[in-house]
Every structure is written in C-alpha cells, then in structure tokens.
Length: 267
Image 1 (spheres, rainbow, N blue to C red):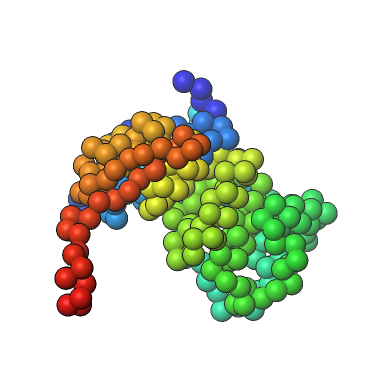
Image 2: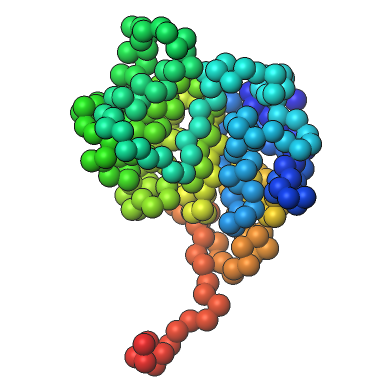
C-alpha cells in the first residue's frame, strides 16, 4: 500500500466509554471523491474530525504521507488539509474576499503582511467557486448556497491536497445541492465528504464508506455498496435500486405504509 496521502488504520474514538468510531480503516486515493454514509449517530462527523487532526483517536493511527498526523504542527497540517464543517456563521461585517483570505493564515506568520502569492490564491479560489463578482458583498447578505461556496473557496485558498466536508448540502435547495456537488468533484484535490443523500453519493462519489454504529458496514464503489440489503441493514428502510442512463445506482425509498386516497381525505 502506498504511504502517499491521508490514511486511517483501525481508528477508534471513544466518548463516555462508548466507541463513536470503532476500528475504521480508510485510505482515499489521490484525486478521488469518497462519500461517508450512514444514519445519524453512525460516526461520520467524528471520523472527519479525526482525519482532520481536530480529534485524536483512542486507538489506531492516522497518517499523512506515512507520517502520524499527531506529529504535524497545526499550521503545517492546515496547509495540507482543509475542512468545511456543517455550520459557519459570523456577526463580524466581513466581505466574501475577507472570508476567503482567512484560508491564507496557515501560509504566513501572524506579523507578516499578505503577499502577492496570497492575493493570487484568493483570486483563484473565488474564480474556481464562481464568486469573483461577489468579492465585495457582505457575508450576512449571502444565501445558504453562496455561503457554502464561500467556505469552500476559503478552504481552497489554503491550497490543500485533501478537502474534508461535513454534510455540505444540508439546508440547500435541490439546484444548489447539485451545483455544489458538481463543483466538489471538479476540484483538483482528494475529497472526503459526509452525505445524507444516497443518490448524491451514487452520482458524484468514486467510492463510498457506509458506517453503522461507528463501524464500516461496507466500502467500495457506489454500485457495490448501495444495494437494497445493505441500505436496509444500515438505515432500516426498504429500497428499490435501478440504474440511471449514466449507469449510476438510483435509490427509490419504499414507505412502510402507503397512504390510501381515503386516508388522505381524512387528513
């Protein structure tokens, strides 16, 4: 196995004596998009924070290019791994450009003025995320989808090789969800993203890891993992799997009880 990139080997994290992540192994390949799937409480967010170095494992090891993550100084790690968490907000009157500039902090000392390289990295990140025309707009005036793009631009300004995102499509309408996922898979980085929407994972991810109570239930391509038996085991719901014209799995959820017309008329 190559030692390049980010890798977790038999990683566990306990909380109150209970394993939240339990013996997980994951090694994203360079440039691929890996989806973390599983019901609420399955350990997706905790695993992302472990991979980012924001939490330390109770057991197992996480490495970056073969070196234990715990050996990296925080600033050095932030030059390599960028994180977009679920909730980002501020009451400070920042512009889009101000927020994206925060991604350059790991690249300079606290007393150092921004350089030409910093300015170009910020411009490139805003171009990549389609935010150039909003550079001077205040954060508080942005829509939810625009705020998510700004956070991704801030992460890209770090110039990472690995990008970790925790349910970035939450609270977005369908158009913005699809736009955001399309953007992510086009980025020139290795991406690990926690997702709720199984069809997004099927459409946009190269590989998926299905978690259940902190353990890996299945790992592989979307076609290998997103099967009717595995989805029922993980989520306790029945599904029907078909294929899209592009060959991706398409998941249709089957209600446990279908309301009749007479039921609806009484509502």
